[in-house]
Image (cartoon, rainbow, N blue to C red; front, side, top):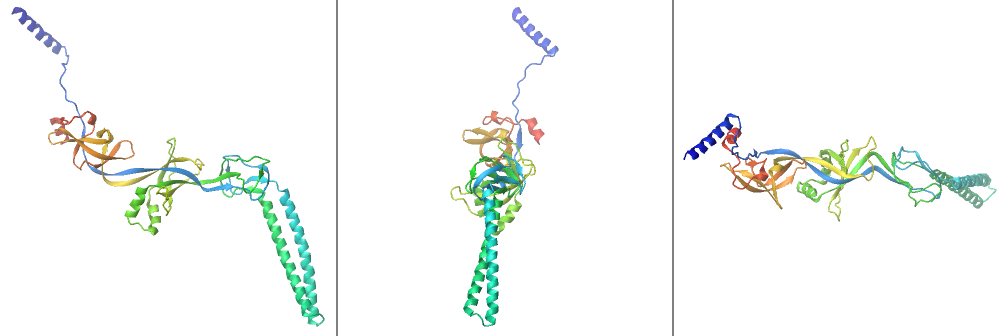
Length: 375
């Protein structure tokens, strides 16, 4: 008995000594959770469309005449201005054709002068009743044929001048050159593609409008003559390149085709982007992002939603401070932080946010001091 009393006394002394030395004894603690009261709010949702960039004036450069390519005056990817020389084709044959056409014009003009003199002479003689009306009419017809021949010769000269001008190919618009698949000395013809010139002062991002948006327009009762007004009311658009870089200039929707593509069931829209620095090129692919305001939406943090295979649920806090799982349907807000709850919750419901993944059915998640603080 004395030994047991001694042991008990030592244990009590040890505990007292630990307490007096400031050592905290472990205490039982409750797991803590954070909750929120569900409210409706307005939110801007980003809609994303896969798009391909195209120049305002994408022009395929082809020669109008056949001949040997004598000089290439530009390089691939070069910025050029309207009227700048791009290619030069051998012009010797065109020059010879022009000289021949001028010579034929001179001959035709000489014939015209001779026919005119004869007609005027016969006209005077007819008035003096020296020649018959037959000779007068015949000379008049000859004069008219000579006038027509002169007109044809002038047209041939003009055509030869145009063909000579076609030997020097200039830029029809300001822009940037694409690939140049030909080389100096190549034989080219109107079937040859010399390069693609993209008018890049303004660029268009083309994308398909989904069938859901088309149905929304139809259900809204929008008339054909109201489309332009609707387009003008659309928000500004942002272009995000494939590497995630956001183009610094905003764009506006400028057109929406009125015919649905039979194979895709979609409409094609164009967003116009200014390109003052020439950083956008035809063929660039990326994403057009447009934000639309949605009113009275229930928005919760993504970490409040627990995923179970193909289902999503949140833990709703009941009146007795315990949690119960509620299945919900969600939509992504696109901001990487929140979900929109489209069904399963009502305004005023209280749900678990931080710690939702650790909650079990019926577990108490609010304690008296937390309830007091929230009140």
